[in-house]
Image (tube, rainbow, N blue to C red; front, side, top):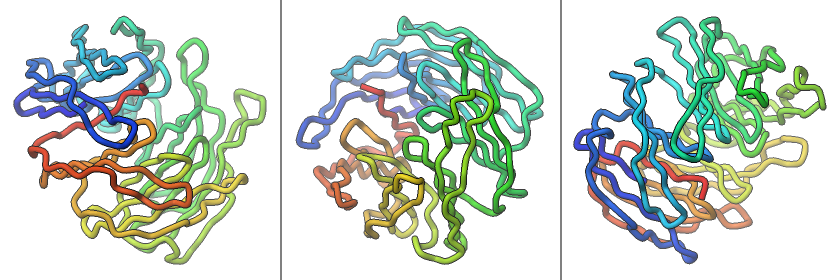
Length: 310
């Protein structure tokens, strides 16, 4: 689904088996005007406007047909909202390190299950398959947590690693931390221990050399690979994780420049440029190369581009 928050216009659709986009629906909705975040959960898409706290649930079926359901009044100015399974994790540094968890339901409703005003300051928060991973780029502090069966947040571990990483990303439960300025990086798994309070991130590899390249500021996972991307140059690095959590570089490519959104959509990836209007579909091959299947010139202004779990 693509949304223009200036006008409330939206377009929905999907990718067919050979990697071509097909539009399923379009329209304009007042509830999408001012939207800053569009987040996918296993239950529905949540639209959120940071300035007002207004939200709405959008139900999208497997054919890409969208139904607008419930309207919500959240607090304003949440800076991070991440979907993990049927839950939404909210974090807000400016208000004093507040966090909240909301459970979503398939009928488009939700229920808050956790809140806290005592979280630490984090520069990067990412969701892996099973965990929420936190990193502070100033001091190198890290923490790992999860959402339990009641919808509460359980911190399982905290620790220290190198400071200065600018990008945190993951594939399954393997984590990559990367510094776009000097190319330094580290990777490792979040280790399952069988004890809810003791699962932790274990840095398996630390590389203080420019082996991946410089400048990457965005990443997306697909087909057991991780793609790192520099919008200014189009440079990309594609790799995979070894069993022990070491990141292995497979290929470097030069893609189209100025993509602002990298979105996994099933087997395929959607790459979209907000300023250029370029809309590209492709996939990552088994040997770690990005293969384009379709390039379209879409209209500019789609600020949010999100795929559901379907």
